[in-house]
Image: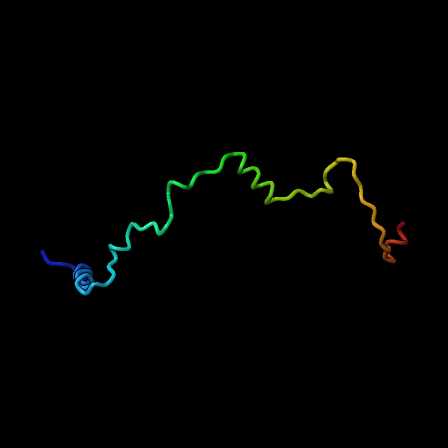
Length: 79
């Protein structure tokens, strides 16, 4: 059987001492696959709570806010 063009090109690169594609394959480049783990349910929920911050005005804890600003003219007639 004949040798393919791609294989000839790889062999030529190897003879010249250059980088071949098979040298690059399988390299994790510093990543340790055993170091990764999936987050627990509690960690997922904490992340969601941090990501989607709740509006504190909607809580019914009895607190209130007083605004000491000037009313606009349109609102002064209503009140």
